[in-house]
Image (cartoon, rainbow, N blue to C red; front, side, top):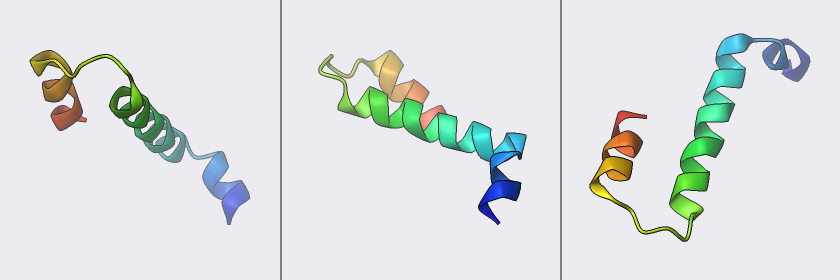
Length: 42
C-alpha cells in the first residue's frame, strides 16, 4: 500500500505541507500575525 501512496501526488502534497507547517512551528523566529495566518490557512 505504501508504494501506491508514494506515487500519489495528493499524498506527496499532504506530506510536504505537514513538514512545512512543522518547520514553521519549530522555527526559532517569533510567530508574526502573517505566519499565524499562513498556518491557519494551511
